[in-house]
Length: 116
Image (cartoon, rainbow, N blue to C red; front, side, top):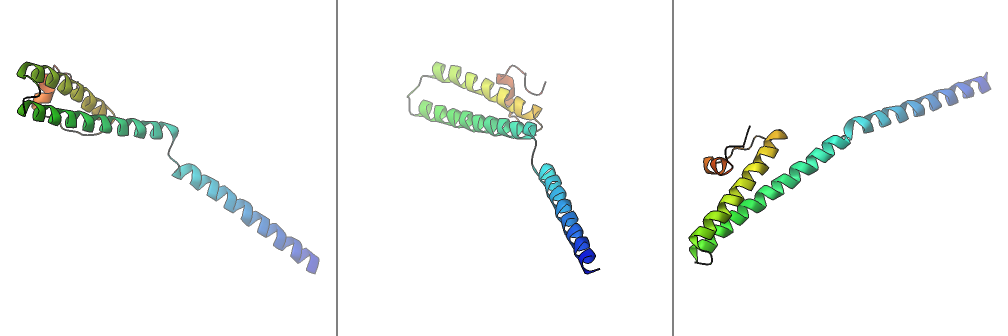
């Protein structure tokens, strides 16, 4: 009987180990984000970085105009381009599910394309 008890103990131990492996594998699959989610997350981060860069460029442009580094016509042209690009970036972020408000002047500079 003693050897039969040992066999049962070994069988139970192996069963518990196999069950733990399956549970851990299942948790790993559930906890790990999908490739699609990771790609979308990377895309969101890239768009947010682009948004920040454009906002900084707009701010720098305003400063350059204030200290007479650029003419009014150049500033207007560059600002219009930056705002249109910014509107496109914000529209893409909105399409990815981020709720980002767009200032009215940026919307108008984009030709009304944002959110459509």
